[in-house]
Image (cartoon, rainbow, N blue to C red; front, side):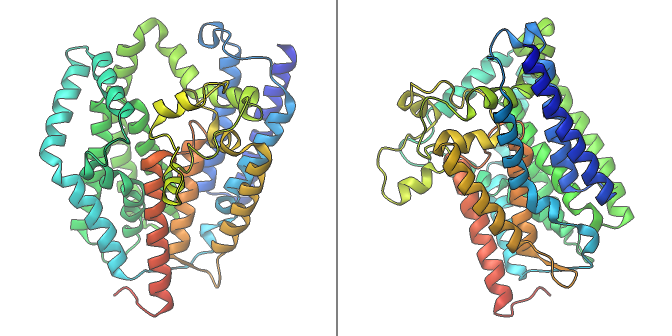
Amino acid sequence: MELSNIYLILYMFIWFVTFFYYQRRRSIIDGGSIVLSLYLVCSVLSYLLFNDEEACQSRFNELELFPFIYLYFMLMLATSPLLNFDSRKVSLILKPDDRVIYIVSSVFILFTLISFPEAVKHIQEGITMIMVDDAVNDVYSENQEVAGSVGHGGLSNITTVISGAFKFIGIFILFFLLTYEKKNKWIIGGLALSVLLSIFSAIASGSRGDAINVALVVFATYFLFRHFYSDTINKWCKYIGLLMAVLILIPIVTITLGRFGEDNSMSSVLYYAGQENLYFNNYGLDDNGIRYGDRTVPLFKRLIGFSDVPHNYVERREMYPDLKVNDEVFYTFVGDFTIDYGPILAVVIFVFCSVLFNSKTRIQENAIHFHQLLLLHFILCVCVLGSIWLFVFSDLGGNLQIIVYILVYLYSKYAEEIGLKSE
């Protein structure tokens, strides 16, 4: 136990030094700052969890030093494009062909608003059950049953699937449009409403994770763009952000109290937010087997002809019963790749992606392209959400989001190369 605490303190210290050094060089809070601060906070929470008997409940083994070294360098590799991006050096954002903005925005808004009446009814009923009827566990159990059946018999709810596939890129477009001198208020309003609906629909289902995911992406995306905004836009973003934080926090606290009770709520929050580094240390480099990409790229495996790919997390856990841990716990997005491909191949993947993304996001002549910002946003989502949970673009829904990012990236880059420009 004593050695484990020394390793945890060293792990916290290295993240503190990294964050301090980055902020000293950068002197502003940007997307890289948010990611590094989350890595630091998670390391502190892991220390607190490991030393909290009630929250820990002997879930973890003694810790080792090497897994923390491995995790640190993998996280730095993944985050390096964000850390190398300095928004202060950008004096011009090269706008994309208008059609890419209209297409992405229209699809996200349309498929979100198609289910608007049903979504509002669902939110009203769900919030009422959670806030008034104290039926949080019933709502959550129903949501888990639905999640466990996903993947069979085609796409049962096409509007939800498509709006989900465009969810994070819709947030990116929303904040990107705020950099325009002439702002399209209808598109901005439609995107903002769609994002809010996705947050409160998740809350109405008793799902804290999905709601927090979207809220964190909104928060981090603002800091990716804040340097490009006027003082007025920044002021409005802060006011609206504070209001939404309060509106989101109240039902999430209620859900937590309803599911775990007042006595266990703080322990549950500590376990929820602090487990990732500990589980990675124990099992990330040796989980008694690998999943052969069945969590990170199942849709892509099916597309190239594999037939024995599990359709959802229930089937995946049944297929790999010998794993010491599966996706029922959190072990960071790095853990998703080490458990899917093994620690050696995972390093190869991370080095390749780091080199590729760094080369594709390099600023030239103080200008940055739309498609470069899009890549940075993809990395931001992976690092922000993966620092606490898992690889956010896994499974059917996540793989569809990757496809949307790729298509938008290729179209915007191609349109620019052939000379299509925004008005």
